[in-house]
Image 1 (cartoon, rainbow, N blue to C red):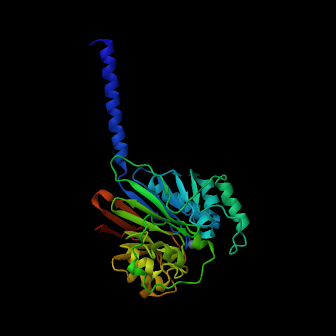
Image 2 (image 1 turned 90 degrees about the horizontal axis):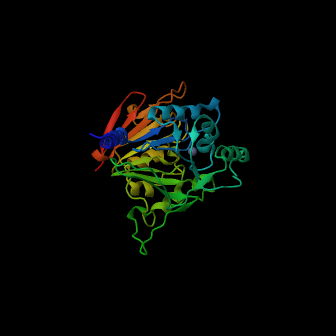
Image 3 (image 1 turned 90 degrees about the vertical axis):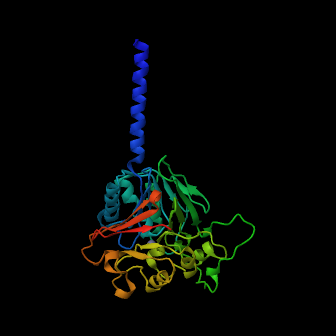
Length: 353
Ligand SMILES: [Zn+2]
């Protein structure tokens, strides 16, 4: 063998090895994982895609010696990610974006998304300082999410694609391109509530799709905008996993929306004394496809009948909170997903029909 042939052989062997390594890396993570981080009645939902990309939806509260930022960092370690690729701030309330500055000091956040810049917020007297701290953490570089737009995610060759589409933002909702409206039967008799002028109504809502699995997160979106999403025309469709809106408050979770999305599994990020309203629990139980409602906390005030069985609750006590997570792992190829309660290790698998 002459030198030239030997060189070609070496190059080919090197290339073949690299292909094997690349395939291994690609198949190392096959699932889509979602972590419900306990931020005591705030919101912080970490999503890690099969390509290893990380999306954090809201960052909990500020203060308590950086408690929520540390809890997010701990969840990231367990998920095997070192940075947040996409941080979605659903709206400018302290329990959702207050924790962003502390988080950005602790870990790297590559991109910030929100419903757009605002100049004042009536319901928060400390808005100016909090918003300035958020803008500084984002280095004034934020992406405004509009209804109908999407966040482009990395895909792998082996896993089914992952899509994240924005359904609502700033009180506007995605609209149909069709000229005719197909009226949604679940809207009949739907009642309106007085106009919500708070930033809850401007929450970013999105649908994440991965094969037959989909996940709806509407932040703290309230009643009338939820109605706009599904009435008169349904712009959402049926949902496999539903993050119970607004921590389970009954100014959200409009029955017309719940009856339309017919969730199979719902996860509620309520606190011991926040959210988890009996009306919402009742409304969810009345939907035809619900198998289980999981809760980040037991609602201390509302009694056993308005809480899920203990095994579906991650944190039972108000004091000495150990901040147990609820995690979801989706195997799109098998059309299954598993929900795990970190407190007791209880896991339950669901088949996506
Ligand atoms: Zn909230």
